[in-house]
Image (cartoon, rainbow, N blue to C red; front, side, top):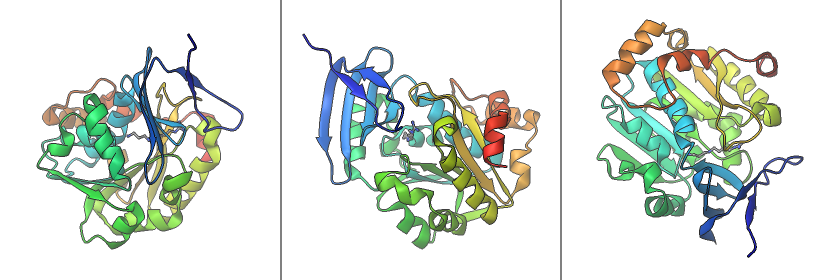
Length: 283
Ligand code: AG3
């Protein structure tokens, strides 16, 4: 019997391999190549164009840290926009806040959503059926450039800047996000693993600093994204969001009554303490 391995092809000098214990799906959509398999350590693993997007076992770390940090720092977020995130994991976290009145998810690839409902229901749960969910199949850049809606929090749950995700790392896109943020709005972005993708982080934060009065990044370690911690971009014109005192975050967290396994107010604050090599990248 031969053993099949999935090899991630994201980084040029590093190849991570995960054993394919059971292949559940493999195919091509209009936009990308999809593979879903079962792995002993990670459970179900979804990769797009050869890059791991989410796994059953560690998705909570990434989704909780990109959803609850901006929402609880904002303190009164009602309108949320998710760009990408077709697996529904981010949507599920956002909807845990009953103060959220609408979550708009803009995904370019309808097949990822259909696919996730079928094979990744443990990740998206009932999120796509929530009455507060507005699913839009469209180009993320077009949406932020043309929508009349204003959002309190925008979460860019993108792929890496290759293929369809590339435009979500441009000056044009970030400026358009700013256009549709409400006052006091917060933008957060998926920015890769700084140890291996430092240039990406430098470029994003440099651009965000030109657009917003407060722009930085915070980090979380997600085991399925190899190469060290992940960086998340943070941008807002309300400097006090990032400075929200711990006691206030705790009060908001308790009031929100969200169940989390990674996020806590203390983890939230600590995530903004940057290791020197990352601070240097965005200096
Ligand atoms: N999208 C982020 C995947 C980033 C992987 N990048 C990497 N390993 N550098 C995740 C979508 C989950 N909703």
